[in-house]
Amino acid sequence: MTEWAISEGLTGYPEAVAAMEARVAAILAGEADELVWLVEHPPLYTKGASARPEDLLDPARFPVFDTRRGGQFTYHGPGQRVAYVMLDLTKRGRDVKSFVCSLEQWVIDTLAEFNLKGERRSGRVGVWIDRTRPGGPMREDKIAAIGVRLKHWVSFHGISLNVEPDLEHFGGITPCGISEDGLGVTSLADLGQLIPMHDVDVALKRAFDKTFGDTVRAGAPV
Image 1 (spheres, rainbow, N blue to C red):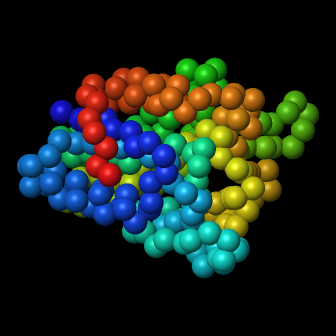
Image 2: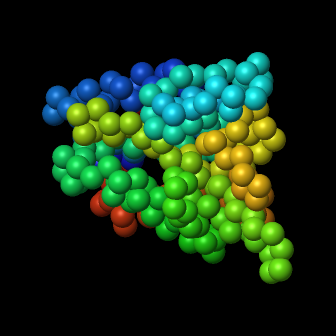
Image 3: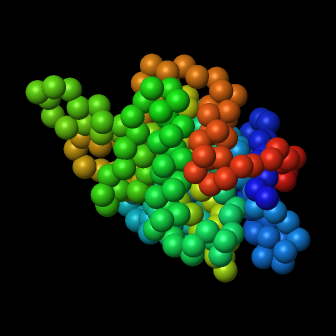
């Protein structure tokens, strides 16, 4: 069974990491079910395992947290839905590449509910929106980031979907190492989709159940 939990308000990042680590340990011990946990964080930056120091452009802007998840620097903050995914991959094929692809598909299916076309890009993990205008230069914006970590084949960390965050807050980092011309970040609101977080959560759950299997509602870890 996979549980589905949502925390109200803003969840501190250290508290979230501690809760995830405790849940992963319990899953490995056979004492807890898998869990998908939806949160919002106060403004902060996280540093992934492959982050480059030069990509932290404004270290004094928000707190910076080291994390051993995959990926580079990311921003989390109000208006962004973070979904922490604690799944036992021994039951799901032990294929990390396929797992990441499934996480991307989860986001793509969620966006489709709002008539948005999310896309994958080779060599760029995450979900992208093509905003190139006819006859204009290429422009693609990232709407969802993905960064996971495995402990004995149980996953944690997960995805972050930009619903209505302050996009200027991404300016303190080179987000996910994105520095090429024509690449940036976007959100549902930036694309003209003013969707309440509750409606986004409903779409996320429906799309997750389609990709990974049914979930049941449960209380949040913190």
